[in-house]
Length: 214
Ligand code: CO
Image (cartoon, rainbow, N blue to C red):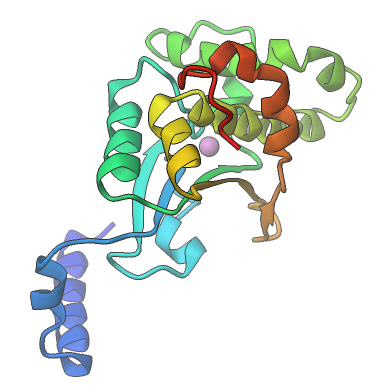
């Protein structure tokens, strides 16, 4: 990557923005009011704004290895709290992708050092869905299915948080589970039936004194 190019591209970008709107950066500096929180994989091939066709100011973004929502990860939890309670986003997207190396690594019997505790959370998703996954013979199909199930579990992890539950009760916050198919370029809405899933687990995870979150 040519760093000189980056800075000359930046100059061209500024000129382009200002030619359309002289106050563009003035307006940007006033603050943000994004309606969407996006949680995705750090994978360099899954470029958030390009994928969503989003402009600066439209999406609050968090990316980590394999788009995980881990309750003791202060980073993702701070992002969720800030986006939901302060920015008051209306939608949260958890976007996974096929051919995710994080998901693949979690299916292999290998010691990856510091990555072990992170990937362990994906292994737990594997364990929960072991019966379904182990009947899939094709290795690619199997690990892509785990990528899908992982998105579903991370969406459920989101809904286990007090901030998201409160926003469900007080306003119409929506959670979406998506998958990006790198081989075709297709963005797929998995249309996860949260109501059904949550009915089964809310007796355990409800943090709102038993108030129904739907
Ligand atoms: Co990935």
